[in-house]
Length: 445
Image (tube, rainbow, N blue to C red; front, side, top):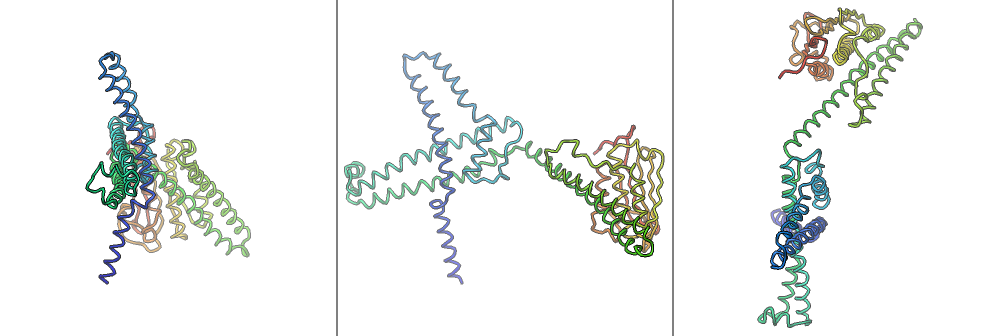
């Protein structure tokens, strides 16, 4: 067992050692580094030209100085430009195999610190590229000359370089091979250094990371909103449809008119669910490019409560509706919509878990807040005081999405939700604060 483990470890070590010689990633990194070396050569040639001009006594120093300053500004500005940084990011992902999650596309205008980090990356690329390109330009011709001399072509080269070793051509062949092998290993080392430097020099800064986290939180919140819309609207429709279908099956022979009313209720619930489903699917297909008008929720509000209650009554549930003054039209659209969804979910739970028990829905505006209460007798009364939704849940709803969805809706509008057993009844109470004029209360940390 130990021998096999040792042999396996030796093979892995050998494969790791030979990877720079056989991997395509080394070739891609070499191409990227040679590009950097060519750019570095252009900068060096330009600098050498100006040094030569300054060294010539006949050259007008002021004119050359102005030209050198203008040239320095022109050739030194690209590393600080946002398009160059974006190009470097794309090149690094292509040639150095850096994951897009590690190095995302630049977003927005770069900060001063980001521009300097991009310039540092540009300089690092050019320096490492110059070293690799110089090694390539020196090692290949030298290795070629060594091999040719070792095989009898231009042996004077060996004598000139080392007369003592000119009698042992095999050493020169070995030296040529070592020089050529040094190129891929040097390239692999430069690639490793560039990959480690890519994220700190080309990655997003703290401001960009915070903006991305906020955008991600917004996307998650929108997904949660859409999930709540689907759960509440489609879940309610399925509950009504199931109960009405059961009622129609029982009444189809004895009371055909009642069966037809149940089927009509199923049809209406299906239409409503399809409208909500079509709206949500449209948002999902549109993605982030959807216009603001298209991202608004369907126009369900407390004005639609009578129709919602009628659906529950047709499903066989005795529902009492009490609407106080100001409980409908004058409310903000968002508050009215979320309150409607809370009532809808609470009714759905009541119809599903206690179909033969009466339900009372109360909606009122008092003390600068919209109060919503939905109560129905428990199938098995539990003598426990009403508790917040985070501390107490219906046995039928433990772990379910309904109460969590209601709590999220109320919390988004800075309200409070309580749901739990209270004196033999299951009671859901939601309170939505209102400012003067009926606007949602601003958030106060």
